[in-house]
Image (cartoon, rainbow, N blue to C red; front, side):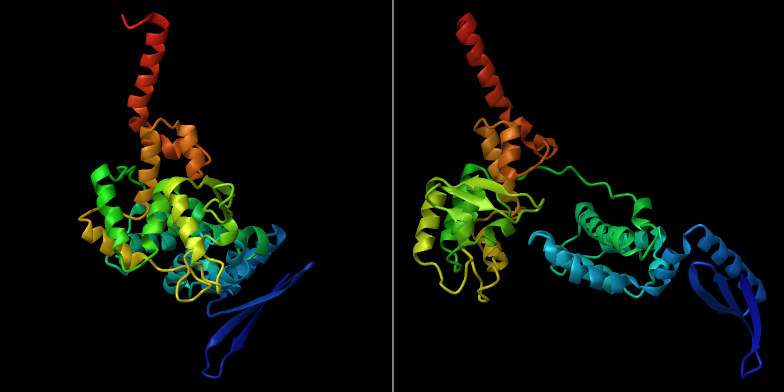
Length: 354
């Protein structure tokens, strides 16, 4: 039942206070300057309570996006893998831009506006963000909002469900040819960072991601079995990588001079954190005269070498840790010559050279 009370303020203005009381729900109240607005709010509130929607609507008016992000960073993100924890930067961007906004005001149109702003805004290093990067920011926000819907009851539905992803370019696989590889490895050996060479060799020989390598601890490495067990991966699943040849030799040498104040293979100045290799990596690329190449392209290079040496797409997917073959189809053309050779040898064996 709704009651509307007319009140006069000290400056002589008329206000209308609405009080809604319904069984099973705490009393709800609001004040308006127009009686028509008061009546409409009363009708909408009563309807929402009867339909079971009012609680979530009320909660959305109590909390801002900034509060949601703070709670998510405190209670949810720490339990995700170290790779996923890089999302903290993404959440901080959303908080800076829209943290003031009540969840009830967080519409698809508002989020889309800031999505487009993110796409237009260069990174701190001056690079242009790609649609794929912006989609990662959107995915991070979407997950936090979904938690608020399903677990916290702060909002009734996520506005992200009505927002389309930006179309991502398929891109071109960039990998090192033999000459580029030799130049890069020589530059890494001459680097002021004594571990850069080992990090790059591991990336080329295993296809592991940068943070998977830099986050390695000695308990992840089994030198006797010749394997690396990745427990902190992007998709949250464990992955075992063979440690062979030159890469194993380098890790063995590294084990002889390992620091005693840390469990990391590649610690930074802070023994609890991995080293930062951005500057020495960029310097090595410049010295090797290699352009348009990212550290992540070492992963593409490893996959390309596997394809050119006869690995199947399923085998490449297993090494890289992809759950489906969709992500490794970009390497299929590199194995075409090998596939043709296999078929040719089979035909020669069965039917003879003629």
